Image (cartoon, helix red, strand yellow):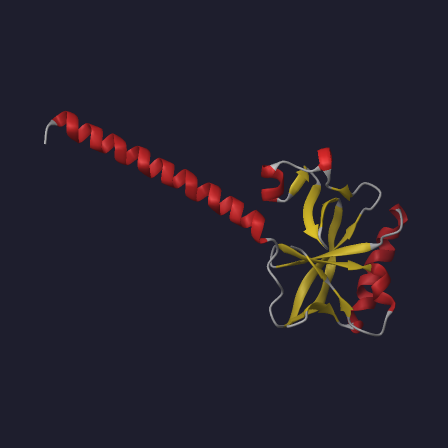
Length: 165
């Protein structure tokens, strides 16, 4: 093979590898954003509790919706998390993690046993000074996994957790 041909083949291989690496990186980042939070596996597991500051959180619609990069990495801006749940897109300002509780994963999704309600309500009361807290977000293993309405924690029944898409 001539020296020029070898150089062209080598140059083509470098471009192909670089393009392949770029495509793989974009696919990995996009996949991370599209898969959403990992579900809590079956059984009892520790989750972290964050409160939502409703006074500055908002629905991510129209011009308020973050761009592709923001949706992919899960941020609306520096301190506002992009979270999809209950069929909607939300930019939530979170406070926490404030503490740990036990959630149970299973066929019916994630639930909070009644014994954990008072622990979450205690965390909520501590945060209520800034305004009434109406919902909390749960994190498991580094991913947000669900949203819980504080009003559902007054029951003696397990509280269902709305999964994050």
